[in-house]
Length: 187
View 1 (cartoon, rainbow, N blue to C red):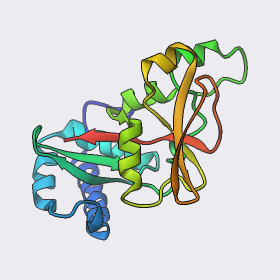
View 2 (view 1 turned 45 degrees about the vertical axis):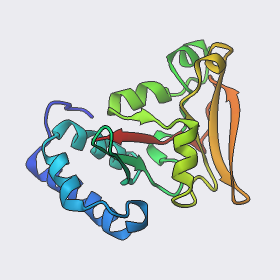
View 3 (view 1 turned 60 degrees about the vertical axis):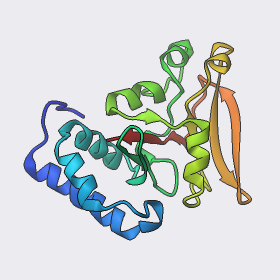
View 4 (view 1 turned 90 degrees about the horizontal axis):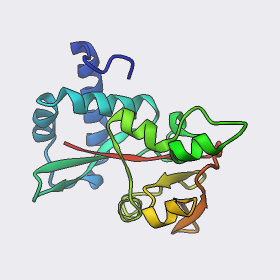
């Protein structure tokens, strides 16, 4: 976000209203979780509201998808049908971006996620998300790549086709108009 230090009260209210609308519309994603408890937690964490605002602004349509009892955290995830439009055409990380000699994308997935204050989904998280709906039926999303794969120059991504979740690999420096990334935020 341009001003990471503050959001106006109106901006915070707009973000919370969007989140509540989506929360109510998609109860199947978070059965047993009460909006008022989530809202109270968010209201005490303006930094998390900013991150959710960035997820929203870039097309992620964040929603609560779970609650971690051990850590006492609500888990938000990008639940847009396709990979968020405002986060596509990005290579995987800074090393991949720097390795491109020409036709460089504007940013990398790892750097953008970090600037937004969110985490990339792991392969396991991505598969869990897919149990809540049909995501990335026409697009794909970069995933948190194990260091061993990244050291060899690769990165992983996933999509859903034929009612099955597929995990693939590609060179980390590659980027495509139909590949973005999904993020998670714990509050």
